[in-house]
Image 1 (tube, rainbow, N blue to C red):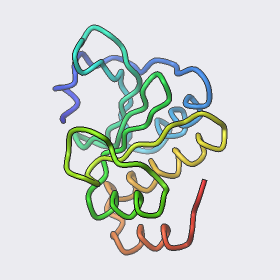
Image 2: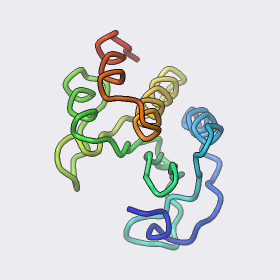
Image 3: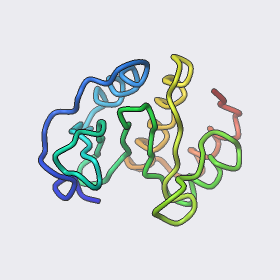
Image 4: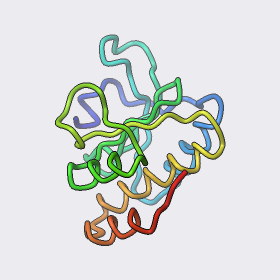
Length: 140
């Protein structure tokens, strides 16, 4: 979904807990646009922070610390198979979107790594290089 389709573009909220570590890291990367993530069913209710690279959605972090990452099947399926993320239980095809819950500082570091993988994908890093990182055994 394009940024303009998500609702009014406003600065993202400050998240509570370790999710803010991930949000601060992601929004500091070149070309990342950070904005409020609105509730899908109530566009007046703030539900987290969205991250885009141009018009391409990188992912978002909900107020409860749940990360939804806009991956592709080629990246998302291996992430799920290796236990590095969970499939998003609704919506897109299996692997197109993955999820991960941030509860601890270690989870925040892992979520930042997941966002970095997807950011690199959107910036043109070849899939082979990304999957090599998965094969290297990066775990939370």
